[in-house]
Length: 250
Length: 72
Image (cartoon, rainbow over all chains, first blue to last red; front, side, top):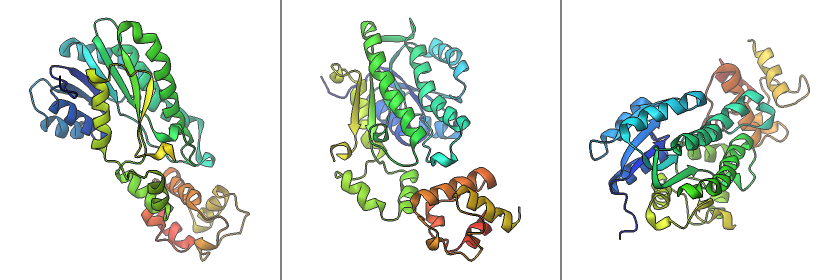
């Protein structure tokens, strides 16, 4: 048995137009899976789909802030695509905002997209006939859910909420043979990281001192997601798996 | 918004006393002008002026006038 093999599997990925979601779509497709990609960025989705192998891949432009519309959208998508073997939730707002500039509305928006859409999607994909036995669900969390950092209260709280939901739902859904985990990246080489370094000036050395295996790439995180989707990770559920270059050990 | 009004908005946002700042105030002279202060100004430009200020750009600014010009 190959450790990383998703031949014939069907996997839903949100936030798939860029970054970790995009890299995950490309990787799991190479490993044999058919994918459904959801993102608000339709042009980005078209580019990703064009780079994939096979004819069964699909994409849907949808704003996951609309929680009430998710159930009908998922039912419609899966009616044509068939039941899922995997679901990866990469969509999220990466917000940096001091407390003095926070508002109830902004807090609600971040919690809605980063956390609310995850729980609602899990509810919908775990309905009868929407999944195959062995369904694996992976959410993208962040080391900020476990370590304090100024200016990211809403973002970090939304990721901590996701980690907590996964621990609860892993127990609740185990009898249906469904596993749930989160992957917990530290700093990944993205435009947001590059701007953070410019803002903090001398922060780069501090970040890389703590993240002593170096800066991660989206593909590094995608590798761990792919493993969690495969049979070989069948004993892992309810966990937050670090993809942090050692950050949480310092 | 006039420059005087913008300066007052910056003072309020950074919780500084009125008339603490002028157009010529050097950013490095502002008390506790650190990465959180810069982040606060970035969010202010986005929220109030719909201007996307980056970490790289704000590090090029020397005086309050540089911020006022960016807000236009």
